[in-house]
Length: 302
Image 1 (cartoon, one colour):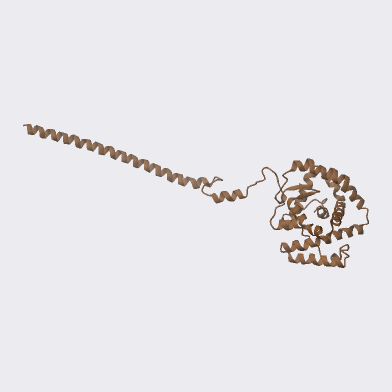
Image 2: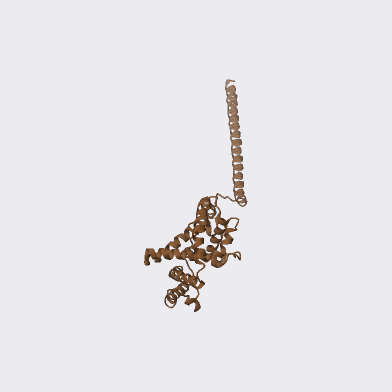
């Protein structure tokens, strides 16, 4: 009897133990299914996000997966820091100083009380005399035309400029008579500032220094004037420069009204000057100017 009771008790304990094991197993299976469902949801979310990124990138200007694209965009950004970009990528970085100080000194003092009276007095000289001085000064620049044309690979133009120099310096009496032009040998101007532009240099900052100028042309004119400073006596070089300045200013008498009557003479002179020099560097970008602005005006400013 006792054995039977003990046997039943053992069976009951075994049953309870098995029941507990089944409950634990069922709980573990539920947990595993829950984890599996969570993994499935996460994978689906990641796949959806991966599909969304390219689609979103097509509608956005920024893509973190395209660093080269970002660097290319940055390289073409405008780094003028709020300043207006002028022709030839020039920037008038000191415009308030240029308008209020440099323009006043150049236009209202130096030009009005010095250069303009001298230029008008010079204009009373006989035209052949004025032409002779102009030919002489241009003949001096043929040295630069020769070297600068060769520097940028324009060997034919360099050879023509050298031929003009030889002919006018000998037959043309030091260049006072432009014999080469009478012979049909045309001028091929090439200032160092233009040559630097052809080689990729921007115009740089616009400055008013004894007239409109840019940093590129200031460096270029310094190089162009070196032969005169090195080969000629200091007083002779200074006298020639002064006479050339008066001669060039006299050629601008016909354009005085354009500047005097301009609504904004500072901006007008700046725009004409920069557009002219940009056209010399990039002829395809040159634009036609008004009829009141002739080529001689810009040549003399140059």
